[in-house]
Image (cartoon, rainbow over all chains, first blue to last red; front, side, top):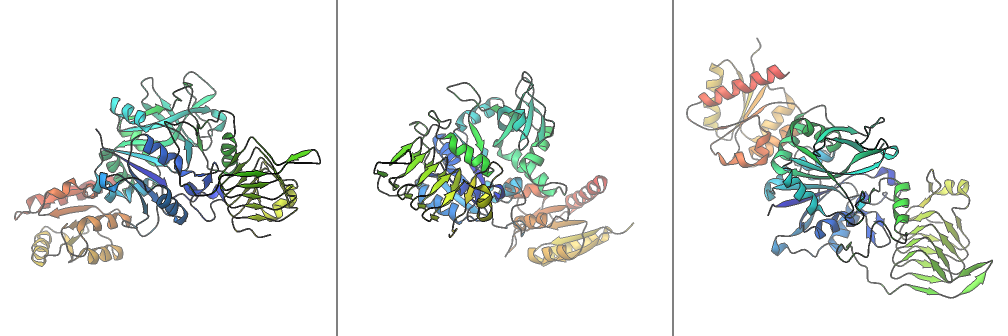
Length: 405
Length: 124
Protein backbone atom coordinates (compact mmCIF):
# COMPACT_ATOMS: atom_id res chain seq x y z
CA UNK A 1 0.00 0.00 0.00
CA UNK A 2 1.21 3.47 -0.83
CA UNK A 3 2.08 5.81 2.01
CA UNK A 4 -0.10 8.89 1.73
CA UNK A 5 0.48 12.05 3.76
CA UNK A 6 -2.21 14.72 3.83
CA UNK A 7 -1.23 18.36 4.15
CA UNK A 8 -4.14 20.68 4.82
CA UNK A 9 -3.55 24.33 4.00
CA UNK A 10 -5.06 26.39 6.77
CA UNK A 11 -2.99 29.54 6.62
CA UNK A 12 -5.11 31.90 4.53
CA UNK A 13 -6.33 35.14 6.07
CA UNK A 14 -9.91 34.70 4.86
CA UNK A 15 -10.36 38.44 4.45
CA UNK A 16 -13.57 38.05 2.46
CA UNK A 17 -15.12 36.25 5.42
CA UNK A 18 -14.40 39.14 7.74
CA UNK A 19 -15.65 39.73 10.47
CA UNK A 20 -16.05 35.96 11.01
CA UNK A 21 -12.27 35.74 10.59
CA UNK A 22 -11.50 38.62 12.92
CA UNK A 23 -10.43 36.26 15.69
CA UNK A 24 -9.87 33.00 13.85
CA UNK A 25 -8.39 31.44 10.74
CA UNK A 26 -10.87 30.67 7.97
CA UNK A 27 -10.85 26.87 8.50
CA UNK A 28 -11.83 27.48 12.14
CA UNK A 29 -14.96 29.45 11.28
CA UNK A 30 -17.97 27.66 12.82
CA UNK A 31 -20.24 26.04 10.24
CA UNK A 32 -23.44 24.01 10.23
CA UNK A 33 -24.30 24.57 13.91
CA UNK A 34 -21.81 22.20 15.47
CA UNK A 35 -18.83 22.12 13.10
CA UNK A 36 -15.84 24.12 11.95
CA UNK A 37 -15.19 24.34 8.22
CA UNK A 38 -12.01 22.24 8.50
CA UNK A 39 -14.04 19.31 9.91
CA UNK A 40 -15.10 18.42 6.35
CA UNK A 41 -11.58 17.94 4.98
CA UNK A 42 -10.48 16.19 8.16
CA UNK A 43 -13.49 13.86 8.18
CA UNK A 44 -12.90 13.08 4.51
CA UNK A 45 -9.34 12.07 5.40
CA UNK A 46 -10.36 9.85 8.29
CA UNK A 47 -13.23 8.26 6.34
CA UNK A 48 -10.86 7.67 3.40
CA UNK A 49 -8.42 5.86 5.69
CA UNK A 50 -5.80 8.63 5.68
CA UNK A 51 -4.34 8.93 9.15
CA UNK A 52 -1.19 10.97 8.55
CA UNK A 53 -2.33 14.52 8.57
CA UNK A 54 -0.53 17.81 8.94
CA UNK A 55 -2.42 21.07 9.18
CA UNK A 56 -0.35 24.07 8.14
CA UNK A 57 -1.35 27.23 9.96
CA UNK A 58 -0.06 30.73 10.38
CA UNK A 59 -2.55 33.57 10.97
CA UNK A 60 -4.80 33.59 14.04
CA UNK A 61 -4.29 29.91 14.64
CA UNK A 62 -5.24 29.70 18.33
CA UNK A 63 -8.90 28.90 17.79
CA UNK A 64 -8.07 26.29 15.13
CA UNK A 65 -5.34 24.79 17.25
CA UNK A 66 -7.70 24.47 20.21
CA UNK A 67 -10.37 22.87 18.05
CA UNK A 68 -7.91 20.27 16.74
CA UNK A 69 -6.60 19.56 20.23
CA UNK A 70 -10.02 19.10 21.75
CA UNK A 71 -11.98 17.55 18.88
CA UNK A 72 -9.42 15.67 16.85
CA UNK A 73 -7.10 14.03 19.35
CA UNK A 74 -8.42 10.50 18.89
CA UNK A 75 -5.81 9.04 16.54
CA UNK A 76 -3.17 6.76 17.93
CA UNK A 77 0.38 8.01 17.81
CA UNK A 78 1.34 4.50 18.92
CA UNK A 79 -0.08 3.16 15.67
CA UNK A 80 1.79 5.82 13.76
CA UNK A 81 -1.33 7.90 13.15
CA UNK A 82 -1.51 11.62 13.77
CA UNK A 83 -3.19 14.93 13.12
CA UNK A 84 -0.58 17.57 13.85
CA UNK A 85 -0.78 21.32 13.54
CA UNK A 86 2.38 22.93 12.17
CA UNK A 87 2.62 26.69 12.60
CA UNK A 88 4.86 28.64 10.20
CA UNK A 89 8.37 27.85 11.45
CA UNK A 90 10.44 30.23 9.37
CA UNK A 91 13.08 27.60 8.70
CA UNK A 92 13.80 28.89 5.23
CA UNK A 93 13.04 32.58 5.15
CA UNK A 94 12.17 35.00 7.87
CA UNK A 95 8.69 35.80 6.68
CA UNK A 96 5.40 33.96 6.65
CA UNK A 97 4.15 31.72 3.86
CA UNK A 98 4.22 33.61 0.60
CA UNK A 99 1.71 31.36 -1.13
CA UNK A 100 0.20 27.89 -1.02
CA UNK A 101 3.22 26.30 -2.69
CA UNK A 102 5.60 28.11 -0.35
CA UNK A 103 3.68 26.68 2.61
CA UNK A 104 4.50 23.15 1.45
CA UNK A 105 8.05 24.06 0.39
CA UNK A 106 8.76 25.51 3.84
CA UNK A 107 7.76 22.12 5.21
CA UNK A 108 10.10 20.16 2.95
CA UNK A 109 11.75 18.99 6.19
CA UNK A 110 8.47 17.41 7.23
CA UNK A 111 8.18 15.63 3.89
CA UNK A 112 11.75 14.42 4.33
CA UNK A 113 10.96 13.13 7.81
CA UNK A 114 7.87 11.18 6.70
CA UNK A 115 8.96 10.23 3.17
CA UNK A 116 5.46 9.45 1.90
CA UNK A 117 4.94 8.06 -1.61
CA UNK A 118 2.12 10.48 -2.25
CA UNK A 119 1.16 13.85 -0.84
CA UNK A 120 -2.49 14.82 -0.69
CA UNK A 121 -2.73 18.61 -0.60
CA UNK A 122 -6.08 19.92 0.64
CA UNK A 123 -7.69 23.20 1.61
CA UNK A 124 -9.10 23.62 5.07
CA UNK A 125 -11.98 25.77 3.92
CA UNK A 126 -14.11 23.66 1.60
CA UNK A 127 -17.43 21.98 2.35
CA UNK A 128 -17.80 18.61 0.60
CA UNK A 129 -17.75 14.88 1.16
CA UNK A 130 -15.22 13.03 -0.94
CA UNK A 131 -13.53 9.67 -0.84
CA UNK A 132 -9.89 10.50 -1.44
CA UNK A 133 -9.29 6.77 -1.92
CA UNK A 134 -11.00 6.95 -5.33
CA UNK A 135 -8.84 9.90 -6.30
CA UNK A 136 -5.66 8.12 -5.20
CA UNK A 137 -6.56 4.91 -7.02
CA UNK A 138 -7.23 6.88 -10.19
CA UNK A 139 -3.91 8.72 -9.79
CA UNK A 140 -2.07 5.39 -9.56
CA UNK A 141 -4.05 3.83 -12.41
CA UNK A 142 -3.26 6.58 -14.91
CA UNK A 143 0.34 6.82 -13.63
CA UNK A 144 0.08 10.56 -13.11
CA UNK A 145 2.61 12.77 -11.33
CA UNK A 146 -0.21 15.05 -10.22
CA UNK A 147 -3.95 14.45 -10.21
CA UNK A 148 -6.31 17.35 -9.61
CA UNK A 149 -9.88 16.79 -8.45
CA UNK A 150 -12.19 18.76 -10.71
CA UNK A 151 -15.85 19.60 -10.88
CA UNK A 152 -18.08 20.85 -13.67
CA UNK A 153 -19.88 24.12 -12.93
CA UNK A 154 -21.80 26.77 -14.85
CA UNK A 155 -19.32 28.99 -16.65
CA UNK A 156 -20.97 32.11 -15.16
CA UNK A 157 -19.64 31.11 -11.73
CA UNK A 158 -16.03 30.41 -12.56
CA UNK A 159 -14.44 33.82 -11.99
CA UNK A 160 -12.84 32.80 -8.72
CA UNK A 161 -11.50 29.43 -9.85
CA UNK A 162 -8.90 27.76 -11.98
CA UNK A 163 -10.45 26.43 -15.20
CA UNK A 164 -9.08 23.20 -16.61
CA UNK A 165 -8.98 21.76 -20.14
CA UNK A 166 -8.56 18.02 -20.59
CA UNK A 167 -8.10 15.69 -23.53
CA UNK A 168 -10.21 12.58 -24.03
CA UNK A 169 -7.99 10.52 -21.74
CA UNK A 170 -8.45 13.00 -18.88
CA UNK A 171 -4.95 14.42 -19.16
CA UNK A 172 -4.86 18.11 -18.41
CA UNK A 173 -3.72 20.08 -21.43
CA UNK A 174 -4.64 23.62 -20.46
CA UNK A 175 -5.22 25.69 -17.35
CA UNK A 176 -6.55 29.20 -16.83
CA UNK A 177 -6.38 30.77 -13.36
CA UNK A 178 -9.47 32.92 -12.67
CA UNK A 179 -10.14 33.66 -16.35
CA UNK A 180 -12.51 36.29 -17.73
CA UNK A 181 -13.03 34.23 -20.90
CA UNK A 182 -13.01 30.60 -19.75
CA UNK A 183 -12.69 27.63 -22.08
CA UNK A 184 -15.75 25.42 -21.75
CA UNK A 185 -15.90 21.63 -21.66
CA UNK A 186 -16.04 19.63 -24.91
CA UNK A 187 -19.72 18.69 -24.94
CA UNK A 188 -21.29 21.65 -23.12
CA UNK A 189 -20.68 25.31 -24.06
CA UNK A 190 -22.14 26.52 -20.75
CA UNK A 191 -20.03 24.39 -18.43
CA UNK A 192 -16.44 24.62 -17.31
CA UNK A 193 -14.25 22.21 -15.40
CA UNK A 194 -12.73 23.82 -12.33
CA UNK A 195 -9.90 23.02 -9.95
CA UNK A 196 -11.26 22.04 -6.51
CA UNK A 197 -7.95 22.62 -4.77
CA UNK A 198 -7.62 18.89 -3.99
CA UNK A 199 -4.35 17.50 -5.29
CA UNK A 200 -2.45 14.20 -5.19
CA UNK A 201 1.24 14.48 -6.00
CA UNK A 202 4.00 11.94 -6.34
CA UNK A 203 6.19 13.22 -3.55
CA UNK A 204 9.47 13.34 -5.46
CA UNK A 205 8.00 15.26 -8.38
CA UNK A 206 6.30 17.65 -5.98
CA UNK A 207 9.60 18.34 -4.20
CA UNK A 208 11.42 18.99 -7.48
CA UNK A 209 8.80 21.41 -8.73
CA UNK A 210 8.59 23.21 -5.39
CA UNK A 211 12.36 23.72 -5.47
CA UNK A 212 12.18 25.05 -9.02
CA UNK A 213 9.43 27.41 -7.98
CA UNK A 214 11.34 28.53 -4.88
CA UNK A 215 14.33 29.48 -7.03
CA UNK A 216 12.22 31.38 -9.49
CA UNK A 217 11.95 35.14 -8.97
CA UNK A 218 8.82 35.67 -11.04
CA UNK A 219 6.40 33.58 -9.04
CA UNK A 220 3.73 34.04 -6.42
CA UNK A 221 4.52 30.56 -5.04
CA UNK A 222 0.95 29.53 -5.61
CA UNK A 223 -0.29 26.10 -6.72
CA UNK A 224 -2.94 27.52 -9.03
CA UNK A 225 -0.89 30.29 -10.56
CA UNK A 226 2.55 28.68 -10.71
CA UNK A 227 2.96 25.01 -9.85
CA UNK A 228 0.10 23.61 -11.93
CA UNK A 229 1.02 25.51 -15.13
CA UNK A 230 4.65 24.43 -14.63
CA UNK A 231 3.68 20.80 -14.13
CA UNK A 232 1.28 20.73 -17.08
CA UNK A 233 4.28 21.62 -19.24
CA UNK A 234 6.63 19.08 -17.69
CA UNK A 235 4.70 16.23 -16.10
CA UNK A 236 1.74 13.90 -16.45
CA UNK A 237 -1.11 15.84 -14.89
CA UNK A 238 -4.60 14.34 -14.82
CA UNK A 239 -8.08 15.49 -13.91
CA UNK A 240 -10.23 13.40 -11.60
CA UNK A 241 -13.89 14.34 -12.03
CA UNK A 242 -15.64 14.57 -8.67
CA UNK A 243 -18.91 12.71 -9.17
CA UNK A 244 -21.56 11.92 -6.59
CA UNK A 245 -21.61 8.12 -6.37
CA UNK A 246 -25.39 7.98 -5.94
CA UNK A 247 -26.65 10.52 -8.45
CA UNK A 248 -23.75 10.16 -10.94
CA UNK A 249 -23.88 13.94 -11.26
CA UNK A 250 -21.12 16.40 -10.24
CA UNK A 251 -20.67 16.15 -6.48
CA UNK A 252 -21.49 18.92 -4.02
CA UNK A 253 -18.48 21.10 -3.27
CA UNK A 254 -18.39 24.64 -1.94
CA UNK A 255 -15.55 27.04 -1.35
CA UNK A 256 -16.88 29.02 1.58
CA UNK A 257 -14.70 31.98 0.72
CA UNK A 258 -17.13 34.87 1.05
CA UNK A 259 -19.85 35.83 3.51
CA UNK A 260 -22.46 35.29 0.78
CA UNK A 261 -21.12 31.81 -0.02
CA UNK A 262 -20.93 31.04 3.69
CA UNK A 263 -24.55 32.00 4.24
CA UNK A 264 -25.80 30.16 1.15
CA UNK A 265 -23.81 27.00 1.92
CA UNK A 266 -25.12 27.07 5.48
CA UNK A 267 -28.71 27.46 4.25
CA UNK A 268 -28.16 24.52 1.87
CA UNK A 269 -27.94 22.34 4.97
CA UNK A 270 -31.57 23.09 5.79
CA UNK A 271 -32.88 21.51 2.59
CA UNK A 272 -35.03 18.41 3.03
CA UNK A 273 -32.35 16.37 1.35
CA UNK A 274 -29.25 18.42 1.95
CA UNK A 275 -26.43 18.16 -0.54
CA UNK A 276 -24.10 17.33 2.28
CA UNK A 277 -25.78 14.41 4.00
CA UNK A 278 -24.84 14.69 7.65
CA UNK A 279 -26.78 11.52 8.50
CA UNK A 280 -24.68 9.17 6.38
CA UNK A 281 -23.44 6.50 8.85
CA UNK A 282 -20.68 5.54 6.44
CA UNK A 283 -19.33 9.06 6.16
CA UNK A 284 -19.71 10.80 9.51
CA UNK A 285 -18.57 14.40 9.77
CA UNK A 286 -16.69 14.52 13.05
CA UNK A 287 -16.09 17.46 15.32
CA UNK A 288 -15.55 18.56 18.90
CA UNK A 289 -18.68 17.83 20.84
CA UNK A 290 -19.49 20.13 23.63
CA UNK A 291 -21.26 18.60 26.60
CA UNK A 292 -24.59 20.33 27.02
CA UNK A 293 -28.13 19.33 27.85
CA UNK A 294 -30.54 18.58 25.00
CA UNK A 295 -32.25 21.46 23.25
CA UNK A 296 -35.50 22.66 24.78
CA UNK A 297 -38.36 24.60 23.24
CA UNK A 298 -40.72 26.10 25.77
CA UNK A 299 -44.22 27.53 25.64
CA UNK A 300 -46.94 28.01 23.07
CA UNK A 301 -48.53 31.36 22.61
CA UNK A 302 -50.17 33.03 19.64
CA UNK A 303 -49.48 36.73 19.24
CA UNK A 304 -49.93 39.01 16.19
CA UNK A 305 -50.68 35.93 14.05
CA UNK A 306 -47.40 34.20 15.01
CA UNK A 307 -47.34 30.95 16.97
CA UNK A 308 -44.48 31.45 19.42
CA UNK A 309 -42.87 28.35 20.86
CA UNK A 310 -42.38 26.87 17.41
CA UNK A 311 -39.46 25.87 15.23
CA UNK A 312 -39.62 25.20 11.47
CA UNK A 313 -37.01 23.90 9.11
CA UNK A 314 -34.06 24.65 11.34
CA UNK A 315 -31.08 23.05 13.04
CA UNK A 316 -31.20 23.39 16.81
CA UNK A 317 -28.12 22.23 18.74
CA UNK A 318 -27.63 20.91 22.23
CA UNK A 319 -27.91 23.38 25.02
CA UNK A 320 -30.30 25.68 23.15
CA UNK A 321 -33.19 27.09 25.11
CA UNK A 322 -36.00 28.67 23.13
CA UNK A 323 -38.47 30.29 25.45
CA UNK A 324 -41.67 30.97 23.53
CA UNK A 325 -39.75 32.09 20.48
CA UNK A 326 -40.32 31.58 16.76
CA UNK A 327 -37.52 30.06 14.68
CA UNK A 328 -37.69 29.45 10.94
CA UNK A 329 -35.00 28.43 8.41
CA UNK A 330 -32.22 29.08 10.88
CA UNK A 331 -29.17 27.39 12.32
CA UNK A 332 -28.58 27.55 16.07
CA UNK A 333 -25.23 26.40 17.46
CA UNK A 334 -24.96 24.98 20.98
CA UNK A 335 -26.17 26.99 23.96
CA UNK A 336 -28.15 29.67 22.16
CA UNK A 337 -30.79 31.31 24.31
CA UNK A 338 -33.89 32.95 22.82
CA UNK A 339 -36.13 34.92 25.15
CA UNK A 340 -39.94 35.16 24.70
CA UNK A 341 -41.66 36.67 21.67
CA UNK A 342 -38.60 36.95 19.49
CA UNK A 343 -38.62 35.80 15.86
CA UNK A 344 -35.55 34.46 14.09
CA UNK A 345 -35.70 33.68 10.37
CA UNK A 346 -33.06 32.80 7.76
CA UNK A 347 -30.29 33.35 10.28
CA UNK A 348 -27.20 31.71 11.72
CA UNK A 349 -26.67 32.05 15.47
CA UNK A 350 -23.36 30.79 16.79
CA UNK A 351 -22.55 29.34 20.22
CA UNK A 352 -23.80 31.13 23.30
CA UNK A 353 -25.66 33.86 21.46
CA UNK A 354 -28.45 35.35 23.54
CA UNK A 355 -31.48 36.96 21.98
CA UNK A 356 -33.53 39.14 24.30
CA UNK A 357 -37.33 39.53 24.39
CA UNK A 358 -39.35 40.91 21.49
CA UNK A 359 -36.47 40.87 18.99
CA UNK A 360 -36.87 40.40 15.25
CA UNK A 361 -33.88 38.90 13.48
CA UNK A 362 -33.79 38.02 9.78
CA UNK A 363 -30.99 37.20 7.32
CA UNK A 364 -28.31 37.64 9.96
CA UNK A 365 -25.14 35.87 11.04
CA UNK A 366 -24.46 36.46 14.72
CA UNK A 367 -21.05 35.37 15.97
CA UNK A 368 -20.33 33.61 19.25
CA UNK A 369 -21.44 35.05 22.53
CA UNK A 370 -23.15 38.18 21.23
CA UNK A 371 -26.05 39.31 23.40
CA UNK A 372 -28.87 41.06 21.56
CA UNK A 373 -30.87 43.30 23.94
CA UNK A 374 -34.67 43.23 24.27
CA UNK A 375 -36.65 44.77 21.44
CA UNK A 376 -33.83 44.83 18.85
CA UNK A 377 -34.56 44.51 15.12
CA UNK A 378 -31.81 43.14 12.86
CA UNK A 379 -32.15 42.76 9.11
CA UNK A 380 -35.30 44.90 8.86
CA UNK A 381 -33.69 48.27 8.29
CA UNK A 382 -30.42 47.70 6.46
CA UNK A 383 -29.57 51.39 6.33
CA UNK A 384 -29.57 51.41 10.10
CA UNK A 385 -27.77 48.08 10.36
CA UNK A 386 -24.98 49.31 8.07
CA UNK A 387 -24.09 51.95 10.64
CA UNK A 388 -23.37 49.33 13.29
CA UNK A 389 -22.62 46.03 11.55
CA UNK A 390 -21.19 44.47 8.39
CA UNK A 391 -23.91 44.12 5.75
CA UNK A 392 -23.20 42.19 2.55
CA UNK A 393 -24.30 43.24 -0.96
CA UNK A 394 -27.28 40.92 -0.78
CA UNK A 395 -28.26 42.30 2.61
CA UNK A 396 -27.01 39.72 5.08
CA UNK A 397 -26.18 41.36 8.40
CA UNK A 398 -23.09 40.04 10.18
CA UNK A 399 -22.57 40.85 13.84
CA UNK A 400 -19.05 40.18 15.01
CA UNK A 401 -17.85 38.54 18.18
CA UNK A 402 -17.59 40.89 21.10
CA UNK A 403 -20.15 43.39 19.77
CA UNK A 404 -21.68 45.28 22.68
CA UNK A 405 -25.02 47.05 22.48
CA UNK B 1 36.91 39.37 -17.73
CA UNK B 2 36.18 40.04 -14.09
CA UNK B 3 37.19 37.22 -11.79
CA UNK B 4 34.36 34.97 -10.69
CA UNK B 5 33.79 35.18 -6.98
CA UNK B 6 33.38 31.98 -5.00
CA UNK B 7 32.47 31.56 -1.33
CA UNK B 8 33.71 28.43 0.43
CA UNK B 9 31.84 27.36 3.55
CA UNK B 10 33.43 24.56 5.58
CA UNK B 11 34.14 24.10 9.28
CA UNK B 12 37.54 22.50 8.63
CA UNK B 13 40.23 25.07 8.26
CA UNK B 14 42.67 22.85 6.34
CA UNK B 15 40.01 22.11 3.72
CA UNK B 16 39.29 25.82 3.35
CA UNK B 17 43.01 26.52 2.90
CA UNK B 18 43.51 23.74 0.38
CA UNK B 19 40.45 24.66 -1.72
CA UNK B 20 41.22 28.33 -1.54
CA UNK B 21 44.71 27.80 -2.85
CA UNK B 22 43.61 25.50 -5.67
CA UNK B 23 40.77 27.73 -6.80
CA UNK B 24 42.95 30.85 -6.61
CA UNK B 25 45.38 29.12 -8.94
CA UNK B 26 42.51 28.52 -11.34
CA UNK B 27 41.84 32.23 -11.45
CA UNK B 28 38.83 32.56 -9.17
CA UNK B 29 38.43 35.15 -6.48
CA UNK B 30 37.93 33.09 -3.31
CA UNK B 31 36.33 34.01 0.02
CA UNK B 32 35.96 31.71 2.99
CA UNK B 33 33.59 31.20 5.91
CA UNK B 34 34.19 28.73 8.70
CA UNK B 35 30.55 28.22 9.66
CA UNK B 36 27.17 28.27 7.95
CA UNK B 37 26.17 31.32 9.96
CA UNK B 38 29.28 33.25 8.87
CA UNK B 39 28.65 32.16 5.27
CA UNK B 40 25.05 33.36 5.29
CA UNK B 41 26.11 36.71 6.74
CA UNK B 42 28.62 37.10 3.92
CA UNK B 43 26.02 36.21 1.29
CA UNK B 44 23.68 38.77 2.81
CA UNK B 45 26.39 41.42 2.64
CA UNK B 46 27.94 40.86 -0.78
CA UNK B 47 27.40 39.24 -4.12
CA UNK B 48 28.95 35.86 -5.02
CA UNK B 49 28.84 33.93 -8.26
CA UNK B 50 28.84 30.56 -6.54
CA UNK B 51 28.91 28.92 -3.11
CA UNK B 52 30.71 25.68 -2.28
CA UNK B 53 29.40 24.34 1.01
CA UNK B 54 30.04 21.41 3.33
CA UNK B 55 27.04 19.65 4.89
CA UNK B 56 28.18 18.33 8.27
CA UNK B 57 29.03 21.41 10.26
CA UNK B 58 28.35 22.26 13.91
CA UNK B 59 25.68 24.82 14.93
CA UNK B 60 23.97 24.84 11.53
CA UNK B 61 24.39 22.18 8.89
CA UNK B 62 24.75 22.76 5.18
CA UNK B 63 21.22 21.60 4.33
CA UNK B 64 19.61 24.03 6.73
CA UNK B 65 21.94 26.74 5.43
CA UNK B 66 20.99 25.85 1.86
CA UNK B 67 17.33 26.49 2.71
CA UNK B 68 18.23 29.83 4.22
CA UNK B 69 20.36 30.79 1.21
CA UNK B 70 17.42 29.97 -1.07
CA UNK B 71 15.22 32.09 1.15
CA UNK B 72 17.51 35.08 0.56
CA UNK B 73 16.39 34.98 -3.09
CA UNK B 74 19.80 36.00 -4.40
CA UNK B 75 19.86 33.35 -7.09
CA UNK B 76 23.32 32.08 -6.15
CA UNK B 77 24.19 28.56 -7.29
CA UNK B 78 25.28 26.24 -4.49
CA UNK B 79 27.53 23.21 -4.84
CA UNK B 80 27.29 20.85 -1.88
CA UNK B 81 30.63 19.28 -1.09
CA UNK B 82 30.58 16.56 1.53
CA UNK B 83 32.43 13.43 2.53
CA UNK B 84 29.10 11.56 2.63
CA UNK B 85 26.95 10.43 -0.26
CA UNK B 86 23.81 9.60 1.77
CA UNK B 87 22.61 13.22 1.93
CA UNK B 88 21.66 12.86 -1.73
CA UNK B 89 18.47 11.22 -0.47
CA UNK B 90 17.57 14.26 1.58
CA UNK B 91 14.98 16.37 -0.25
CA UNK B 92 16.70 19.57 0.79
CA UNK B 93 19.90 18.55 -0.98
CA UNK B 94 17.94 18.54 -4.24
CA UNK B 95 17.81 22.30 -4.00
CA UNK B 96 21.57 22.46 -4.59
CA UNK B 97 22.86 22.95 -8.12
CA UNK B 98 25.32 20.10 -7.71
CA UNK B 99 26.44 17.53 -5.17
CA UNK B 100 30.08 16.49 -5.07
CA UNK B 101 31.52 13.87 -2.74
CA UNK B 102 34.77 15.10 -1.17
CA UNK B 103 37.97 13.60 -2.48
CA UNK B 104 41.66 14.40 -2.25
CA UNK B 105 41.59 14.92 -5.98
CA UNK B 106 39.77 18.16 -6.69
CA UNK B 107 39.22 17.53 -10.39
CA UNK B 108 35.56 16.66 -10.05
CA UNK B 109 34.83 19.62 -7.80
CA UNK B 110 36.59 21.98 -10.19
CA UNK B 111 34.78 20.58 -13.24
CA UNK B 112 31.47 20.89 -11.44
CA UNK B 113 32.16 24.48 -10.37
CA UNK B 114 33.01 25.38 -13.97
CA UNK B 115 29.91 23.65 -15.34
CA UNK B 116 27.57 25.31 -12.83
CA UNK B 117 29.07 28.74 -13.50
CA UNK B 118 28.78 28.26 -17.27
CA UNK B 119 25.19 27.12 -16.94
CA UNK B 120 24.38 30.17 -14.84
CA UNK B 121 25.96 32.44 -17.44
CA UNK B 122 24.09 30.89 -20.32
CA UNK B 123 20.73 31.13 -18.53
CA UNK B 124 21.13 34.76 -17.42
